Length: 227
Ligand code: DC
Image (cartoon, rainbow, N blue to C red; front, top):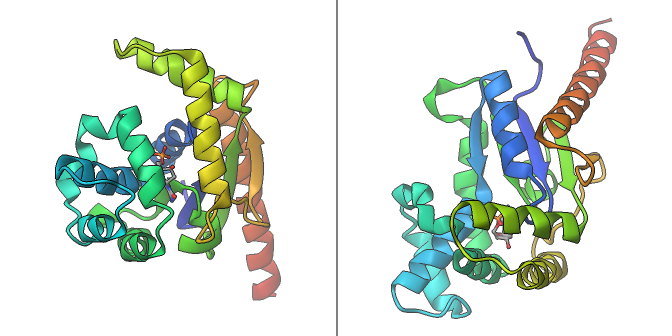
């Protein structure tokens, strides 16, 4: 399949289903996949493991500078504790700057010589890769996201209280949206995909539709330019 785009940026709030979608799109197009939330989680977790406080800017910057790639596959990254710590360190401009370089390098030179990258996060279409040819903003109601997160935790055998998960998601949304550096925002040219009433398959088909539409627009632009 020949495509005329190299970067698919997927943004949206916590637990909207970005990761599942991004992975499926990466597989479909043979692109590399980067979960940028894992980078912030790795920084938060490194601070916690060193016995520090994620709100301590100096400790967070040091952890971002020493970021160890191998931590990106650590199952502990998925814990609610790591998510909370990630959301705190993600509000620090110095931490964001440190992680920016890693993300842009991944986008410009996808590992394994792959022809493109699917990158998910909060500010990919707006800040990290504003040049991405395809941008999708994935969202769902806070209740839907809390239900999915609760089910996910239960499936993993962890105890989960819906009310507490919902409160946590709302607090995280507020922090992600209110921070002054790179707040969670839909890029103007991103396509909005609300997955509240879609299952995984439905969300994937809708995302693929969005990508195809973006490809049609790029094709038309190419035709006009070559005329
Ligand atoms: O998507 P996630 O839950 O793994 O993200 C963890 C935290 O990292 C979340 O609170 C927001 C932050 N984050 C960010 O600020 N920018 C990104 N590109 C990705 C994640």
